[in-house]
Amino acid sequence: MEEKIVIVENLKKQYGIVKAVDGVSFYVKKGEVCSILGPNGAGKTTTLEIVEGLRKKNSGKITIFGKEVESIGKEEKERIGVTLQESSLFPKLTVTETINLFRSFYKKSLPAREILDLLALEEKATSYVEKLSGGQKRRLSVALSLVNDPELVFLDEPTTGLDPQARRRVWEMVRNLKKQGKSIILTTHYIEEAEELSDYVFIMDHGKIIKDGTPNELIASLGSLSYIEFESHANGVKAILEENGLQIKDGERIIIKTPDFISTLEKLNQLSKEHYFDIKNLIIRQQNLEDVFLHLTGRTLRD
Image (cartoon, rainbow, N blue to C red; front, side):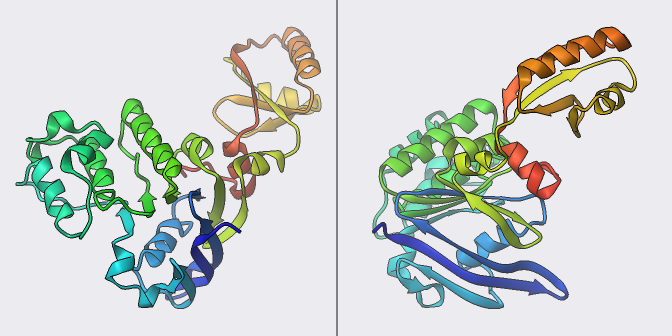
């Protein structure tokens, strides 16, 4: 039986009449990457901060490494790493000095050069924190959560503000942590990030987990559909397609949901000739985690 590193049971947190977290339950196994997805205000960061011990809960039970979170001592805390959504760093320290400061907080720590290498910060080793770009500061914050070689890592939107190359470097880091048997709880605004990295996904909205499963299980729950996406300069195209029995998905581009994309393409081509509308930048894709999220919440992840 696989070891459960984190167990959350019926967690609740309320601010006045607002139920920020409303009966959330989940667990994370050893060596597993779990993502919590939700639109802004869904309660995911509040949930994470309560589990991390940074906020008080109203009720519920949280167990980490077999101990209730309230009774966790220094020994257990040494086994945990945390990247907060927003971090404060010391502007007058260099990157290496900052890493060594954080290393001093723990009995066991990785060498500073290894931390620098994790997220390609070697060239900034002697730079002052105040001279770093926003993306470099974010990479440093993520790296600092790993100085103690933790067994459990919380990453709250770790790649926000990073360019695509730096984001991929974080993805590589997460995969390596998983290979080492570490457990990771991740929140993200990038749906492809969750789909790429997660063993298991929890979708939150209005303080509740409304759906959970592996990425493949969640995608399969929509049934077998393809999406035909295109642009058109003509007016009224969506109305024409709907009048002819095609199922249209809301969005800036025209998106047709179909179980049979070949026959739908033939019908689309016929309608474009009959009604004189153009078809630009057409793509055909399979459904993904973003479609699941939109179906469940009515919003995109960035809303």
